[in-house]
Length: 321
Ligand code: TXD
Image: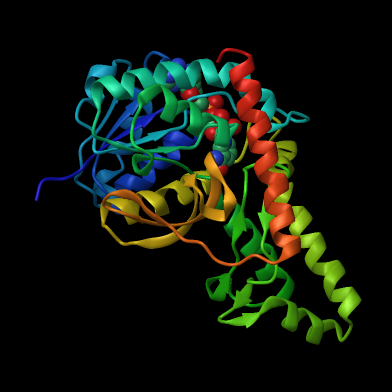
């Protein structure tokens, strides 16, 4: 079996970590593209020179020419500016939409059969734009946000309960913005509801509610918390790891059920928008959006988040982007 070809568009912070992770996991051959001259060549040379130490023998190259991504099986897009302190993800809309448009045109031409994972912000709008410009079918275009947001939520629960994060399942739905929806009711530790464990820990229902609400708020603001500390950019290790989990599920046809920014066709009552929902990822990309019942409160939060996505997409269209 020949190795898969993976193209990464945008060789900045996330692009660099993605390349290193793909190499270490030997997921396929990597081509790293950036418009900045020598940057992707320098990063890939650096990573290639660790091959003897880490023990990988995939091909790794950097380029400023789209012709080198020709025939890629999987494309991961990180091109675009990151936030600065005080900025919301939506503040990146105008700049990053222009970049995404050019990337989508190039990917359409050079890698027309690829499956695409988008990471650039504002995520929900960038995925929509890529789909519209490329004309790719919905199953081959998705965004990464929910794997990371869910991992952040799980991390905070793990710290609070003093239990390994490996045993925690915590799902975040909706848009990749301040309206995202960490689903409290289904969060569990190896099947045991997190709320029950918190109520037992504090022996006080009101206190348990206060603690979970604080974790929900921290999850929603977690990207901004990192931006504030870094001062010069946004999170990059965890977004890269999260996209790799999706990429691996696709490349190995694992059928993982992961929170994915996927195109909805009636699921969760939404038609024609990209929203963070549970989806099965396999060799055909987004193979199935998995629906489950939300109670009234959860559905209201989801609707609010979908409204924010619609507004963002409308803003983008109104600006002619
Ligand atoms: O979970 C998530 N989805 C995210 C998304 C979590 C954190 C950050 N997220 C967003 O990813 C962030 O807001 C940005 O929009 C992207 C990329 O973040 P990164 O931290 O990697 O940004 P960098 O280091 O600035 O890298 C961006 C690279 C940089 O090298 C530019 O030269 C390049 O993008 N760039 C381009 N590449 C290709 N084509 C064009 N036109 C282009 N313009 C800039």
